Length: 213
Image 1 (cartoon, rainbow, N blue to C red):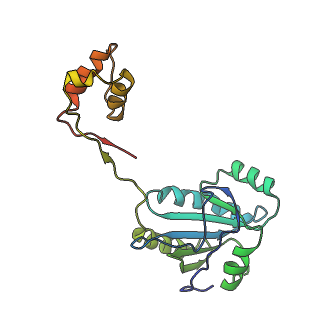
Image 2 (spheres, rainbow, N blue to C red):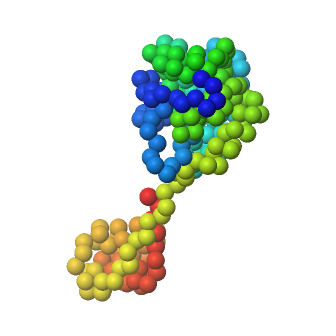
């Protein structure tokens, strides 16, 4: 598949490392930009092994945007691949292309003749194909990642606690403690139920707290 080609939906592979719901060519929600790097590799390929640290570093670099690096091998020994991934510290998604779908629908149509081979895919359209250590690969991924949607969740504003001391005393100690824990308020020195209620009145009525989902 050449640059500009649309990648078909493929999900009949086994995820060895990463999100088990990973798919290639799947639907992208309106208004979002999703980037996938699909890299073909094998345990016996020396140049492939050299690219592993580079790909791991890139996945960490783009962890806050919708960039997913997927390493695909069509070797058939599942346990061998699992052990290899663990020993190599591959910090990105790794899949076992048991049915050769990725190989037959992406690798072969691209005209690739060897591995490692990588395609940078933006919203299911290929924007680069070639060697993952090629400087053009890095440039293409950087440009794509700049447009990728953020995956960071915005903190949620917690409500102000406006109940009186007397009203708070109607709650269970566990509930009072949870109010404080959610807001990151230290409860050192609080031993009685009334201590928790008093601390909530003093700290949670006027100050806005946020919780990271």
